Image (cartoon, rainbow, N blue to C red; front, side):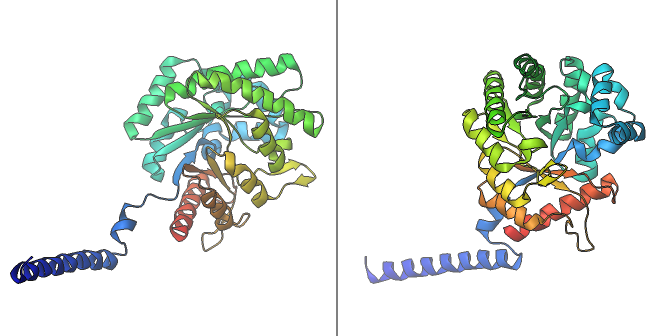
Amino acid sequence: MNTRERYHRRQFLKKSACMAAGLTAMAVACGTTPTENRRSPLFEISLAQWSLHRTLFGTKTIDLIKNQGWSAFGAAIRKEPDSVLQGDLDPLDFAKVARQDYGVDAIEYVNTFFFGRARDEGYLTEMKNRADGEGVASLLIMCDAVGDTGDPDPAARKTAIENHHSWVDAAAFLGCHSIRVNAGSSGSYEEQQKLAAEGLHELALYGDTHNINILVENHGGLSSNGKWLAGVMEMADHPRVGTLPDFGNFRISDTEMYDYYQGVEELMPYAKGVSAKSYDFDAAGDETTLDFRRLLKIVVDSGFKGHVDIEYEGDVLGEPEGIRATKALLEKIRDELS
């Protein structure tokens, strides 16, 4: 290379470096760098249908639950499913409300809001079309009132597993990745682990045929013991069996609570979703019952990359205000952790 060629090469490299520096300076002035601008969020945010349960059920059904308990609710919904829907919101409008009222583009259903519709293709088609029309992704169906997959009675456990088949079918139809089930049982610690694991494995085999995962939430009893439920995951020994850690559901009994933070940490290795349960907020917008920063750091540090759902269950703020407060807090902490 002669002197003239070396000179032109130096000028070219100098100009290129200046251009790159200029682009970086512009990005810094805007508060980002080119790499940060392309970075995906640490987690996505979805809306759990349960956040609107008062609006969907209405006062009469909420009073039934408060005064007579969940067993009375279960009896009512099995006898006449639509009788519990006394509220102002049509369940079919859930996707529209999530997108238009709260700016959320992913949702998680609860089967009690369309309990008699698991095999109603017309209803499910309408539900799917409305979600698709809003550009909203359907993630999972939380399933209640259809039996415990760890029931100690073999016949009842078989029935419970079969009852979930229609919800696996519905989840697949809607484009979900999972259903959430209850793994309740009775007996000793070890006996309940064994029964729950067997039931989950069997249901996961059906899930295989529809590409649907089977998730367990900490949802009362031993399922709210993180160590117990992590053990069930290991014993179930199926890639479709996973957890849906809930920030708040760690009450094992009336007299026993499990540590929230330990429980979430124990369940995150198996998580295919996360439920950010919230109750109340202070003037700064922080949750007053739970340390959301600590919990979300556990979630992020686990390597989880899926959706964290808004599940507001407080009674100080109204449901719309509670949903917005939870979303704002998730976004704020996500930015801090980023």
